[in-house]
Length: 278
Image 1 (cartoon, helix red, strand yellow):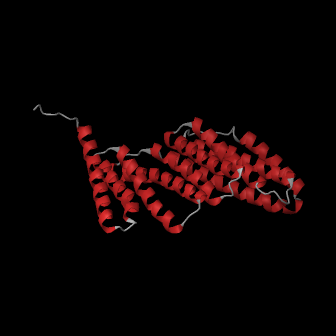
Image 2 (tube, rainbow, N blue to C red):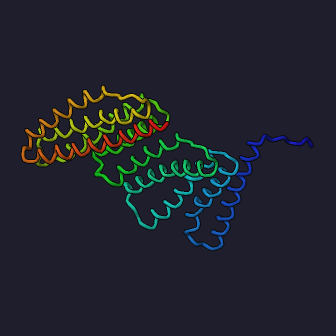
């Protein structure tokens, strides 16, 4: 018979699939004899561990990632069955575990191979924020907009800061101000004050413009001042509307926004100091 020549990648793939198949068969066989009714729930945990180990050893990121997914979903299934969660909460927990699997893949990839696979962080933000909607909200449209929008904003900002892409920093910063600016003032349906709510919304929008100036320090060594023009206008108009809607609370509101501005300015100074040491 002719000798079969297999590529190195195929040999690694067959090894991984073979080990996972052997483990699955052993667990099924033991379950048939013992009838524990819980051993099958731990099968994804074991398969996930095998896939993770082999993915790290053979530097196959596909199996490494799916190993994390199997491992965490297996643990999650045990918790879901024991806790008798509702369907909505179960869906949220699955999304969060799926997102954490991407983060675990990112961390272990760096720890074992010193490779920074930053793209794996982006699904972590989006899936965990989606899961948070089902676990920590009343499932209103504003809730979906806030959690999912926050996840997208974090993804854009993180990618823009890591790859130094100003085209991602701008929409990420704006979205980081727009999403809470719409959610926090308009989430309440009782005792509403349109002037106050609009003022708070515009001040949040101004914060988004200010973040562009802060995070632009990662991209350029010069001071990027133009976002402060629309940001300053929005802040002044927002303060004016808030004062008109709630004069008795105006001093505290302006003081709080001033404190946030000082924090943002401090972050900018630290980034500027980092740039001077390069």
